[in-house]
Image (tube, rainbow, N blue to C red; front, side):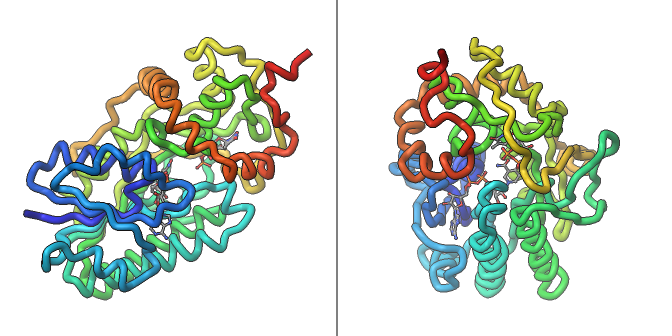
Length: 349
Ligand code: NAD
Ligand code: TYD
């Protein structure tokens, strides 16, 4: 039975990917290899525990011994690696980039070496459109657009991609890279904009909007993103890069207004705050290659995806409460010192 090693499978996209792969690939066994950092939560993967084609191993992608052991199941090496594990939040990388270089760059290199030594046939690097840097009002990034990352997070992801490229060119590793756009959906840690807005609005807290709020993102539902990663794993050309972008461009202000309207909450909860340093103005992707070569195109409309995501967060209060622990509260106080720490509705006159 084929065996896939999924790193970072206790996080947002990785956990959704594992559920999709177990459902769509009945012949595949999956090892979930994850360090369980603040973003990787046991509750996120609790439902997978009894699944016979699945096992969880806690470990660090920077630990060559642990990564090598995770690649073996009953003596045989993994057939494929899908590498999600990363430090993923731009604001945390601006505060301190060390962990981003360690996990995202060194961790990718360690995993690439372990995969090569084990003779793994396929390696999928989950990357991001942020490696391209920022666009003005016009144009879209293609896979051959230059790399021009602006945040420490984006730079670490670009560096990781270059280590993957080197492994393809030097050792003939059959690796594929996907560059996904801003993703939303169930199990996303509440520090990211959409779950932050949902959880703040539902507790009457203000929602920080950086700078002018005119920055543009193309949000992709996690089901679409995972479908694209699976298609790239199955059908992508070795050495190729595939953009996986959502369809609708939205400014951050418009996104929050639509989200609050869908939740039945007032837009006065939106609170302009200081801009993020080096804040990329706009991301937009040309996804023609993924459409032509993988037969992939996103299916979830933003309005439907947002409504489903609101329902999910409202229906998973225990998960939200566990994620919003004391460490997260301390992070929030550091990141948003100008925001009232008390819920806005209780402090408003
Ligand atoms: P996440 O922060 O929700 O999850 C990351 C997971 O990696 C966590 O489970 C964490 O415990 C694990 N991890 C962190 N350091 C580790 C280490 N040293 N060893 C093993 N595991 C470790 O991230 P996400 O949003 O699910 O993103 C997954 C991947 O997709 C990342 O590579 C990210 O760069 C990429 N990506 C994310 C988005 C997005 O909008 N979220 C968009 C495009 C690409
Ligand atoms: P985020 O979810 O952090 O993703 P990324 O930085 O990878 O794009 O942020 C999405 C956009 O929302 C980005 O333009 C920054 C902005 N933003 C806010 O305005 N307020 C916030 O509190 C957060 C977390 C993000």
